[in-house]
Image 1 (cartoon, rainbow, N blue to C red):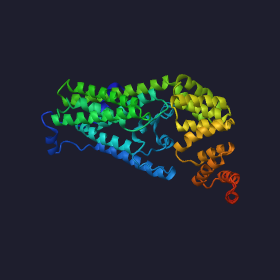
Image 2: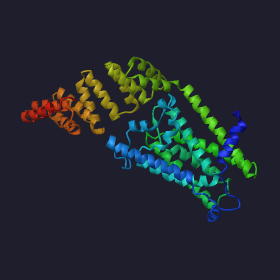
Image 3: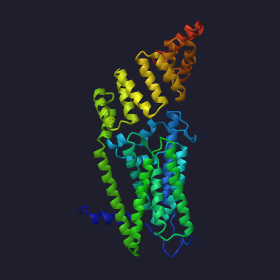
Amino acid sequence: MPLTWSAICTQMENDLAFTTTPSSKETGTQLLSRGQVRFPWVIVSLVTADIAIFALMRIVSAYKYGTNSLELAGKYPGEMLLQWGATYGPNTLGGQYWRIISGLFLHVNLIHLLFNMVFLLGVGRYLEDMLGGMKTLMIFLFAGVGGALTGIEWHPTKLIMGASAAVDGLAAAALLCCFVVGKPTVERRVFIALWTIGAMFLSLRAGLMSTDVINSAHVGGAITGLLIGSLIVFTSTLTDDNKRVHRLQNRVLVIIFLALSLAFVVLVTLRKDVVMFYEGQKLEESDPLAALDKLKYFVGHNPHDVAGHSELASIYADLKRNDEAIKEYQEVLKIKPNDPGVLYNLGRVYYQSNRQAEAVLLFFRSVPRLPDDSDRYYNFALSLKVVGAFAEAEPNARKAVRLNPKVRHTHLLLADILNSLGKTQEAAAERDLAARLKTD
């Protein structure tokens, strides 16, 4: 059968036909007592899926990274979130289109998960009661996609994850629908209004308090939900015929799907700079000069993007083009002053440029503020040794050894520092340990 508009709408109608809208003459409580208000299977399934994925990530994170993400604010590493499917502009627009959906089911820590699940249950169960499971699922996904698209447009190189945008969309749609669809009680309308205000206020407040939270995604999700909710409310006022209302609402969802698909295609087409960033990252090891050209193109279109300048600086440093690397890291520090990761990387370039005194100052400002890492403490100790600060170098070298005792060059560095301090016996012991380690 040819794929026509009528066929698409008929198929959508058949797929959604099992959903029911409560009668306008009976309250939700009365229907529940007669067993006609369905258990919110879709919302409960979404919550279960989110919790299961978070738990699985917790197990993998503890094994691979040693991360305790059961601490309320303990974050999963960005590398892990990207591997598991977080929405990331360059990868998403560069061909990994599935990330536009997968990011909805990832959460960075326990606070993030708990916040979203509480409001997903609080708002979603009411909406599913009014519209049915399939339509609620569609609104959840469409609002999430709308939030991801706006997030990518405004922050193309930031990780976007979590159900916040989808929850804001559900809340906006529920707030509109509760005044028309199913004629719920005043008490239910108040509850829906409170849940909606709470969800939107807290999500926007989180975005204002942290640069890691992307408010443009929250706004995009809420606007998508408002649009869908408005159209559903409009169709509900056109006729009292429930079958016709369902048919019209299904067509609304088809239109929203097509509109979001078109918006995604337009975004991929217009944001060639973001695609270039993705291609540049892929070429970083195999063809760094070609990667530089693509990343320069991206930075030219996004002069205030931290990731773009950082990637350029990293490639320049690998190519020993130290002055250019320093310039790029300094640009990053104008955008994110005193960022410890940037200070540390700039310190490494200073050391590579034989500007050890400046490197030491940056390591002092950055290494203690970063997660413990043997390589970082090794570089800190090495720079202190070069400038003759042996007493300060010793504890840093010891920490590098303690964090990774199987690395030969850390033992040798510690031995040299101990020998310079006159601790010859300890130095000899470290050399013996290094000798037992054949390679790094």
